[in-house]
Image (cartoon, rainbow, N blue to C red; front, top):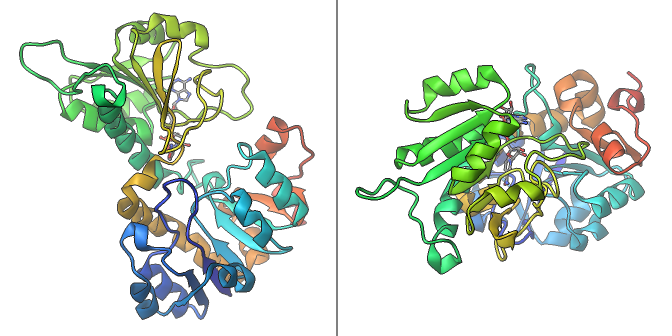
Length: 371
Ligand SMILES: NC(=O)c1ccc[n+]([C@@H]2O[C@H](COP(=O)([O-])OP(=O)(O)OC[C@H]3O[C@@H](n4cnc5c(N)ncnc54)[C@H](O)[C@@H]3O)[C@@H](O)[C@H]2O)c1
């Protein structure tokens, strides 16, 4: 199969889907790899590194024209829509529920779209979200450290334990991969950290991996309001179901927060767990609602590009190789975990949650694959 890796064009997106060792793996399996000129530079990989590994370095148009599978990081942007064609395999973070225009063109152009974020493992977890979640959680806390600074319109707090003054308080909703990552850094700097979850097993696990001064609270309205009142930073690190119309933190609840307090929404789904959240970019990362600063950049890992690229490629590569080796149809039929990621199949939407959220007809992957 011919695999094409384009350079990402999203705002400040420096990640790339494949690292040179990934190219070697494809070549070893008898495939061809096309890398767009300069695609890896933002992550520290030069064209020569890819060439040495066996890839062909070509212009953007050639990548999209010749490749049978486009292996990417982020969703397709308007400028990339023109490259779509029937039967093109797209393997990337698609987020079809969030990007309606992309869903329209994927359906119209009859692509086979497999999204990283929907692939599951045997425990029902999301193995291709996991590496980015840890980086988004840790990176999200580092962004909090940046945006509480006065020069960035913050309230001038240093998120660390300084003798003689009140220790800053950080509340983190969700004791999953992102939440634990954020809590690890926040607590190591001496902040008073509270982590909230509805899953007691997750809280118990957190007890053994986080320092003993991290408070582990069951997530209900009472505890959440208590945290809103006392915290300097609130981090949302939960996967809010895309079909839900209600919110965990409503606009009305922001009145409990101190003026100038910061919300970092790692999930950053428009109007999701945090009602006042709307996705922002690294160029314009923050905005204020009800006197509360919101940071909602939806590609936090991009800024830690070398770490994120390497970690992402390690996670996605086995699936990409399987698709290339078997062809999409056999790979999807034989691997039920990969099949969970099938969102588009020759003009049919195959992701239930996007169907429900956008009021579109959909079928299951099993129906379209006749299994
Ligand atoms: N912004 C970015 O660039 C970026 C990158 C990667 C991941 N993410 C997002 O980060 C989020 C977290 O991912 P993860 O891998 O840590 O998920 P995860 O499934 O490991 O953890 C989510 C946790 O939230 C808990 N939870 C669910 N509902 C809750 C509620 N009502 N109150 C409290 N806790 C609740 C769950 O029990 C679970 O422990 C995801 O939404 C993911 O999409 C964002």
